[in-house]
Image 1 (cartoon, rainbow, N blue to C red):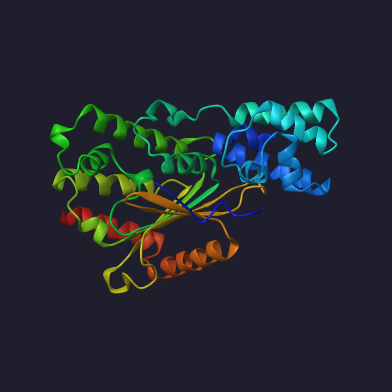
Image 2: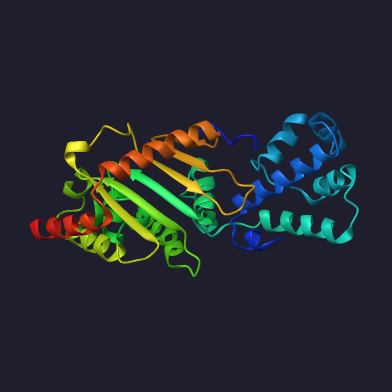
Length: 297
C-alpha cells in the first residue's frame, strides 16, 4: 500500500469491529486494487468523478471521506456490476462516514490526534515506549488529571474533566471481548516522577501492578543503566488484523504528530522496540520492581 506518511499535520468482520478511520483506509485500499485490476489511471478515475488525480490518491489512502455517488461511479468504471458487491461497497461508505465514539469530544481533540484514536481503536496489537509519563491507556483518572491540568488538578476545569473522561473512555478497548495486545515499555524515571503527588503515584503504581495480571497486557521497565540508548523519544506502533491496513508508527510532538507506515520505517522502529524489551526488566521482574517502588513511595 502507498504510505500514510510520513504525514505531519498541526462488509466483513473486520469492518464491523474497525473504527471509521480504519474503514476508510480499507475501503480506499480495495478501490485501489479494483482500479489497478481494471488498468485505469488515477487521472482517469479522477475525471470520472468530476475531480482530480490527487483526490483519487487521497481517497485510496483513506485520508478523506467517501461520497456514495463517487464510489458508485468508480465501481461502474472498474467493471463492478454485481448488485451485492456494489451494495457491500456502499455499506462500507456508510460505515466509514459514521462518527467515532470520540465525536462527543471533538471540541477537545486536535485534528492530528483524531486519526490516532481511530487507528488505536482498530489495532490488534499496540506497542508503546514512553520516557516521561505512564502511557495513556494505563493511567489512573487522578494521574491523567494531574497531567492534563499541568499539576493543578484540585482546580480542574470542566474542560480538563472532559479530557480525563475521554482518556478513560480510550481505555475501554482493553476490556473488550476481543482486546488488543498491549505491550508497554516505560523508562524507570517514569515511576519516580511525582506526578500529582505521593498518593496519586502510589495509586498509579498499584494500578500498573493490577494491569500486569491481564493476559493482554505486557509491561516492562527499562532500568536507569540502560536508559536513553535504544530510542531518542517516545513512540507507539500499531498493528492490525486486516491485511489492507499497514503497520503504523505514531510519534507525537507539541504541535502535531507523525504517522509513519513505510515498511522501512516500521521495521526500524520494530527493531528499536525489540532492543528496548531486551534492555528492560522481564515482565516478571518488572512486576517485582513495581512492588519495590510501591513500598518506597
